[in-house]
Image (cartoon, rainbow, N blue to C red; front, side):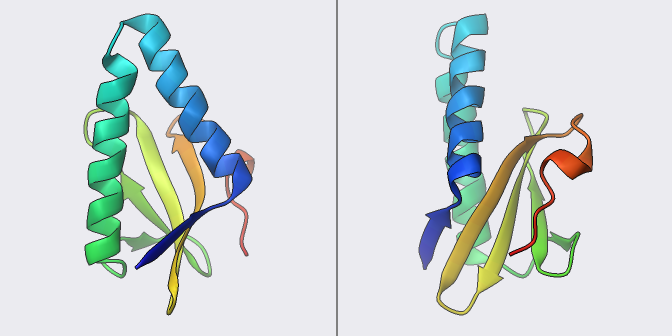
Length: 96
């Protein structure tokens, strides 16, 4: 299944990895591994995650306070945000 990132989501992912690596060397890499694990689960079970908008679903990461927001379509998945859970929803809720 095809995975596509909206540009803001890709930038959020890069920022989070860099932030965690700045905090402790290798921690950002661990964040990215957990992110990839989440993407694999989303790819396998795209309808399993909570619907939080008209088309947007949410996967909550276990170790880090982040969530992956995505839209599932027949031809693939669009990652709309990689959002810190303590941010206001207006900063990451954008429907396609």
